[in-house]
Length: 384
Image 1 (tube, one colour):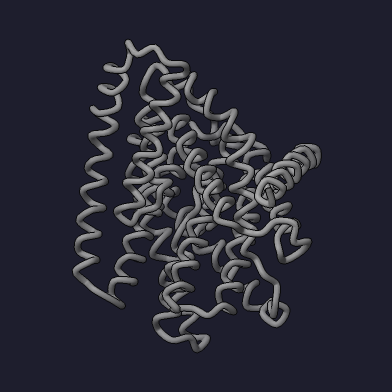
Image 2 (spheres, helix red, strand yellow; image 1 turned 45 degrees about the vertical axis):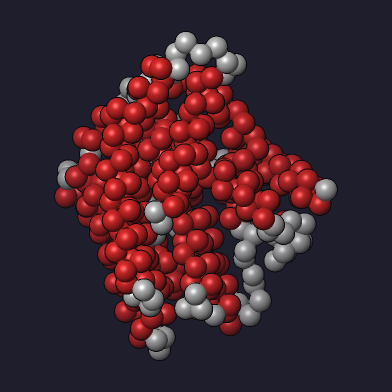
């Protein structure tokens, strides 16, 4: 019953936060993140992270990325594949280099310094997707690059993390994991091109209530599970599932059915849960370091993405949108930080410090995007 009470508190707080956010012109996701901090153990302690809440939040982010894939334009993603890859590669390498060098200069050992770099190399597209959907920019030029770059960014970050962890243990496991990830990525191509159309073709005659939605969810969760099994983020599998199903004639109906449940239950739990690990104990003395890390986290994503966008002749505004869309670290970085704590790479003090910076980047990113989307002469127009 305690979990049910906590879920009710989350849903009520999220509903009120979204309403207030709309009234004051704040991105809805920011309101949900802030209310997550308020109800967390760090402030009022109304909600604590439990296995059930963690599981429900995982479903939330999986469905959010699945819906992003459904809304994405595959032809647009293909068209802007090259700038997406450049944004992803530069967006991983620049923070990896700068954070490693900076934390090394602060006196951290090489392993911890490199781990800092890996944490901030990751990008959380889920937060950006919510803002893109709120402002109708998922099918814009900049939106296509952000989605493509964020997925590639996640893949690169996961590979680097895998290499880092395996270098501390059995290298044979790393080789098998890389092989599994490569096979999975090749498999995704066949899923989009062949498997999904065939599945819907052979289930056409089955008479079950909401059968297309049921099949879509099965495909989504299956690819999410497979992605997790090969050591990748489950959101990668979910996004490609949505991308594949988005090419079918049932996409709109499926999107409507899943959106209703996802946005009223699972996704609010996910956004509120992001803030639950935060702790302010002993952080007063770390304000200067946290501020510098936050500024560095923002700049090491915006600057390389902006330069990459301009290199492919995107406007200054669209290039800034792309860069801002890569700023949020969100759940991806939190997962990496948790792994670092479990592997004893970082201390609980460093863990709290990193979580605060991650939360700050996650809150800052939507504000920057909102400003760019609502300011005059925005070039990220929607493509039908």
